[in-house]
Image (cartoon, rainbow, N blue to C red; front, side, top):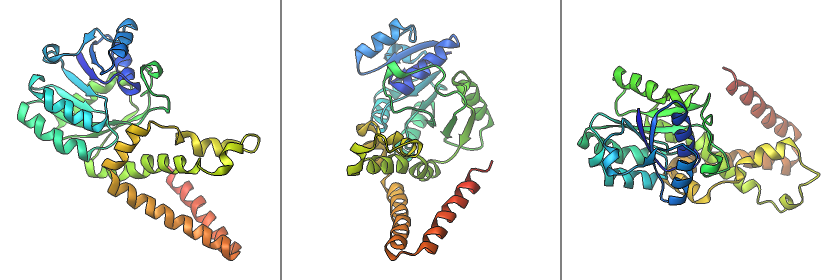
Length: 277
């Protein structure tokens, strides 16, 4: 295949490496020409993606922020070959799919919302690797759910990335679930580290601290945009979390050991239930 990749950071760079390792022809684009040059020197891209060779691409990955994804597609849709597949890699889907589905219909290509469930707090091409997606889930929001040919084409297209499984969903369900499983985790971790005790944790912390603070390190520009684009769902999750915390606080203030034990056991039980296959 000839594959175009817009954005050569951690996600786009890893896609470039994975597809190049399988012998595909890669055209890449990044607003930082230095990154593009480095990717070319590393042998991950065969040339710069432009309007002319965009027409040659069988597939196009958009690995940039949500607003940049929509902006790129609006400006370049007319150069995308009819029948080709276009996938984004954003962490929100309603804001992207609502704008990109109509563009795809108008210009004759197929847009599918995508969200690879893999990443790292280390950003940029230098941290990208060909096996980043190996075994991970790829969330997909197709324009329709009754097209077996499209599903087969997506499975074939995504084979070089070695995803563990493909999960098809709607944009609404995606954003609702991601508010809980990803966005709230980042916000809570980011808030937790603001305790005055954080600066003095060395010697007093172990696995619990490391687990809870791992995603406090983040790209603030990207996460601010993702959270704002999914603000309604994230607010619902955070308000529910705040109510749960209030129950623990109330039990502690009252000295109610039985109530606290019940709350802790409830969380312990739910963790066991949700971890079952």
